[in-house]
Each structure stands twice: as structure tokens, then as C-alpha cells.
Length: 147
View 1: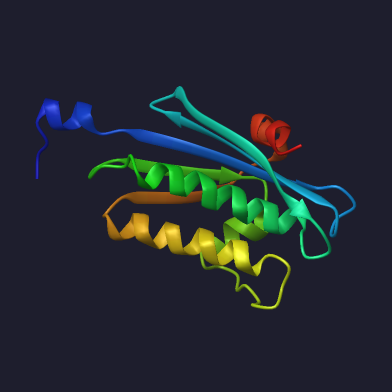
View 2: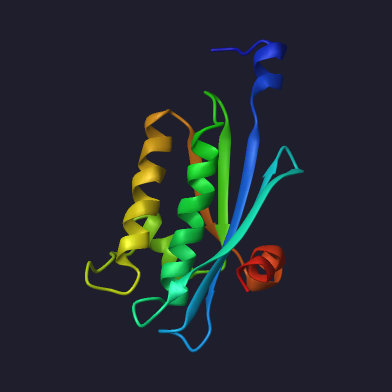
């Protein structure tokens, strides 16, 4: 199927970069950060603290950041849009890509479930989503926001 120029111009490319942090990991204050570009232009940024306690870790913060970013995108995505999700967490990227399995009793399970559910909802809208690991050097803004 060929696209008209109007249809092509309407399509958007989104880049979501995420990161999570936890001082005295696990068990202290966990923070998350994310940045979203739309067609190479800054679209959205968010950061925050999850909470304080023994159940929080950098991994739970990573998954929560992915969840928050994908949730934000879910409301604006249209047919034909593409999403590239990048993070410096091999664990988060490989679990969400279904290369690795998540253990339900792990410290990151609740946040993982939220991220996975919204990821599946986006894919049900026929939106192309690619998850990719990147080196920390290329994830500086999300890292900064997570702290």
C-alpha cells in the first residue's frame, strides 16, 4: 500500500529514553527519569521519586520510567507512528523484548507488569515499538533526570 504525502507527513517518530536510580540500592529512594523526542524535537520530560523502602531498587525505577513514558505516548500515538525506546538497562530492555524472563517475586515485578501492560496496549494499536539497549553515555539526560 502506497502512502500519500499527506499520510506520510502525518506519521510521527518518537524516541523515548529512560533511566532509573536508587541510592543505597536496593532500599533507599528510587528515582526515575525519561525524555521523549517527537520527530527529533523535544516533546516531553518527566522525573520523580518512587518512594523510600526496602522494596525499591534501580530496576524497579527503570521499569517505572518505561511505564510512565509509554503511558504518556499511548494517549498521543496514531496509526503509522513508530516508537523507539532506549535505555541503559540490559535487564529492562531484554525482559520487555522477551529475551529474558522476569521473576514475579523480584524487586522489579510490579513496575515490570505496568510497563509490559502498556507496551502491549500500544502494540494492539498497530504501533511499531522497538526496544533497544544503549550505553549510559548516550542516555545522559534520562540519567540526570532520574537522580
